[in-house]
Length: 114
Length: 113
Image (tube, rainbow over all chains, first blue to last red; front, side):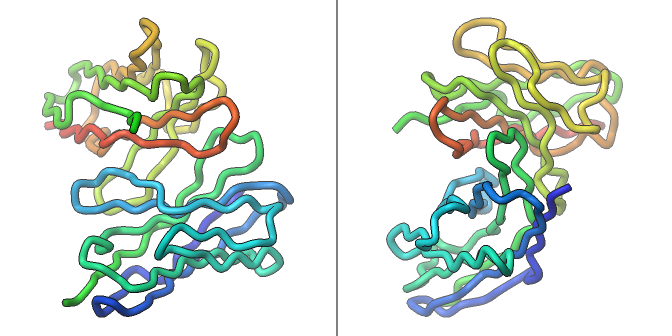
């Protein structure tokens, strides 16, 4: 069974600084998708960024980028120029190709200091 | 921008009562999902639904749970006889035919007393 591990329960960053959230996963599949979702205090799940495993190029969405290391099964999220609105719980998630079930990590709480 | 909606936002019920959680997926999506998140815990997959039938379900999704797409827009999760441990946030999600990203609704917070 696939598992997703987020080893940082909580992280802090100063406004305008950069922070990296870690995620590792375990799978025997070669084709899959990885996601970062953000959950603010309202508890809605908001997609931040996604990565296809067959793509070597790291995904980028504005201030958000990933460092995808397929061999190491690592998928970290970098947030640049952090803003107060980035404060939330961040979940890493895995989906195998043609799969239905997103497998989530335990989440990392990100606090942004002004 | 189209979004998944869920009603109610909060529901309080007595143990043993039936509840129905409602979702309106994004209009051209064909794949539908329910997840739950017990407070302080991981988001867990419950069930996926496609072409009017369950395509996959987890161990959590026992006989007390059922899903239905009663019309062309709604997708419901029914819990027949609620237990205290069913208290959680329930998320509906949907996905289009040609993409892998699941889009989540705002959730229904269920409290079983």
